[in-house]
Image (cartoon, rainbow, N blue to C red; front, side, top):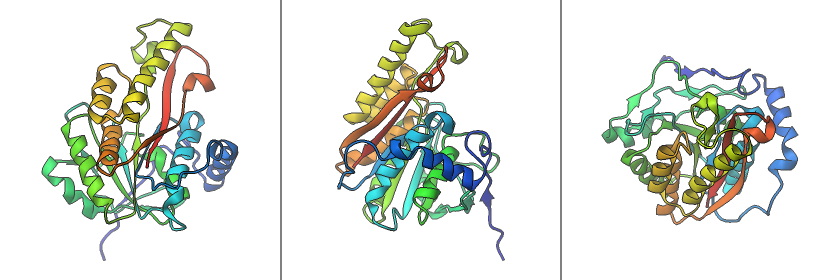
Length: 284
């Protein structure tokens, strides 16, 4: 019998609760926020951009965005969720995962490894050891909770032409599979601990962070994937701009329109001299 290769959790108990009941309680505490806003669109969602900090900071926005994006796939939800992570230097090839499943506190998400061959021409790097990255894992409990029937296709992407090629591949897959793309990125990391505080501390720094975030969000709303990557990298406005750009590219090919779900920062939750921007967007 073949040995099932399961990628284990690394961040449970720190970035998000480790026990299912605690996870459910946390999601339930966000219920009024998740269900707030305009009525759900009847347009089919293509992709979402979500933040990836610890759940205390950005989990509610990731949950709201994934809920709204997955809700109109019907009672079974999407068949496949492609989670695009990042934290890679520009120009690096995609990172793929050959594990058969990825563990979450709610149970395993089966990985559709056969799709990896679709990016083989991009010379992807298979990842075998500990992930040492939060961009994908922090989304997985939410996906398993909200899309329990879905399989998973995880990829990490850098900024560059490969991100746009992966976006085109995702658009082609979406023509035959009920696919939801979830692209994971935080926005501006502002403050001395991040080595980035060009406007100084206090309100001038907060205003700079807000405006820097907004310029990236504006590019995502157009959408303009190349501008997202260029501005995200050159102005330190997104830490995983390639993932977001791939989602936007898929949306463009499929004729999707963008909607901003919300935008706030870690400093809105914990004031101080550090501030990280979070945005949730849906293409449908």
